[in-house]
Image (cartoon, rainbow, N blue to C red):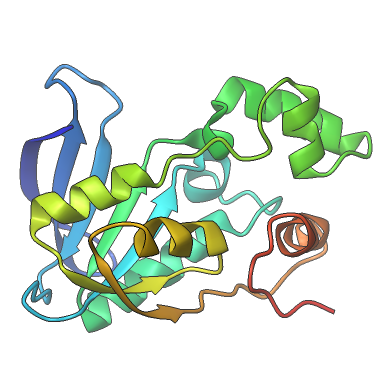
Amino acid sequence: MKRQAEAKLPTEWGIFTIIAYSDNENDWMPHLAMVSEKSDFSKIVNVRIHSECITGDLFHSKRCDCGKQLDAAMKYIHKNGGILIYLRQEGRNIGIINKLKAYNLQDNGLNTAEANIELGFPADARDFKLATEILNDLGVKSINLLTNNPEKLKFIEQSNIKLNKRIPLEIYPGKENIDYLKTKKSYFGHFLHLK
């Protein structure tokens, strides 16, 4: 995976440099790094590894906490410096079409993990090693990771990047996503304080 293009991007959160990463320059779905102008890679860097969620990030779906996590992470990174890595791994890497099929299975009683398995996929097929490749390209050596996900911590701990600390990124649950968040906690072991 290579750095294909980059540009300055003024956003509602602040000014970032957006960098596209893929195996070839004609890839229409590259992974992205949003680098805050306040970043200093010679120090510990705040990092959020965020997997694409069209329904949550773009359409503000209430079925998940993804869009609100993205917003909170961008605010934090703009204020404190850092990088948001946006991995194109929709629906825990099953794609938007299968994700919509999974929604229907969830509406009939399955949780998010069970629905993916019912469709013939792993409960979570994402590859966070891609994020370490991006961090290595940027020259990042030590990070604070904004996450509730133990798998992301494990990927960083098994890489050449030093994990300084975890920064929680909890979103207050609503009635539409409380079961989803409970599955994140019980099935995937996310660090969440739910009742």
